[in-house]
Amino acid sequence: CAKLVAFGHYSDLFSDDPSDKPPCRGCSSNLVEPYIKCAECGPSPFLLCLQCFTRGFEFKKHESDHKYEIMTSDFPVLEPGWTAQEEMALLEAVMDCGFGNWLDVAYQMRTKSKEECEAHYMKNFINNPLFSSTLLNLRQIEEARTADTAIPFKPTDDPPRPTFDSLLSRDMAGYMPARADFMEEFDNYAEWDLKDIDFVDDDSDILHALKIAVVDIYHSRLKERGRRKKIIRDHGLINLRKFQILERRYPKEVQDLYDAMRRFARVVGPIEHDKFIESHALEFELRREIGRLQEYRRAGIQSFCSAKVYERVKHVREDERRKRTMLVDVLQYIQDGRACQQWLSKQAAIDAGITPVVTTITTSATGRRSAPPLNLTGLPGTEKLNDREKELCQVVRLVPGAYLEYKQALLNECRRQGGLRLAQARALIKIDVNKTRKIYDFLIKEGYINKV
Image (cartoon, rainbow, N blue to C red; front, side):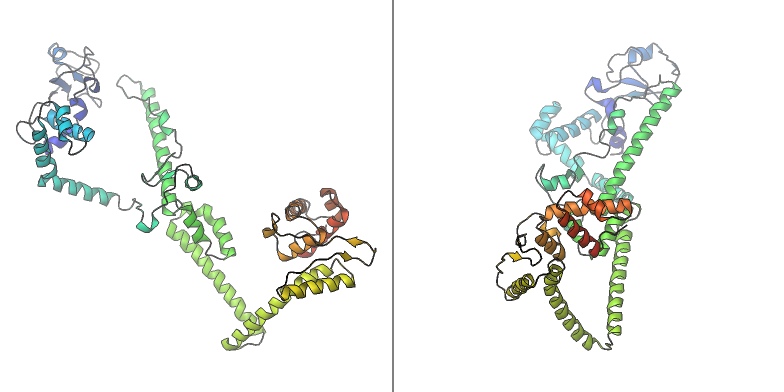
């Protein structure tokens, strides 16, 4: 086995294909075994055919009196009758044809029968206890070497396996679970700068240093590629949906912190990052609990039994307040007894579980019939509005999408100017001036914008 391992370092020199061997440095012909390898010239092998060696060929640093090695594979390694060349040919044939396909292996080897190939391979490479123990030691050494750097997936963390070019596949950035790799690497064309580089003895010092620099740059790219993969694996970012589900378990305030601190996850490990977020989530819960206990103390509550009654009564009071919110908001814009009575009837119908019938509202100031409140059911953007914003859109008969657009425009202008006047709002929103006034007053009241 030791001979075979040592021989493996020179397997490229003993290939059956003459084009795989370097040519003779003397006559540039294809080398045929046996041939000569200089033991003193290097690092690239200096090879000579027997004819050039007998003539005493010399070139640059190579001299005819240098020590040399005779390169040949015509010697047994594992057992008599099998040369080193045949051992390499057998391994290559098994690799090409597959284990167990001994008929094709024998056909590719041409020097051994099907039975001889099977018996020799099973005896020396499968059932050989010395070879098996060597493989075991090598595996243990490799596992010990990569114990601190390997990042295996747990069975519960098995990533999804979406179909090619699906939405989930694009969310996973082309990750292929079967290969545990990405379809496109970071800096995907880094190898292009390296593919045509060849180190030869004739290179000048400057050219040699330049090639070394290119290789160093390539190594730095590989390190960055590995670093990014490690971050993705360590933090569980491959299964993006699972990551998002885990993130939603926190309160909104902690989710905002999680989003802000995500960029710093690359400089700390996943455990340290999760501990940081969990500690802030615990701090948020403690602060909320402290605030609740302080509220009990201000209310004169001294026992948890009384606190339960207080919470129950508080929820009832908040529910009643929410039911009155619609009427209170509408009364800011409609100063009419009949309109108020109509909204009271509508609220009573809602409380009774009956669909209210909306009728036209007649204002007492002008005597004109005004349009009924806008029905927002099914309109895009309604789900983005709170109850007070929905009521505003119903009263001024403004679709939610347009309201959100006007609101964002006013907020941006207010941030830019440090405040906003009604005249500026009317110049910015080209709609009915009365609607603009109502939107402006509403945003001022809710604290979204402020006056100059």
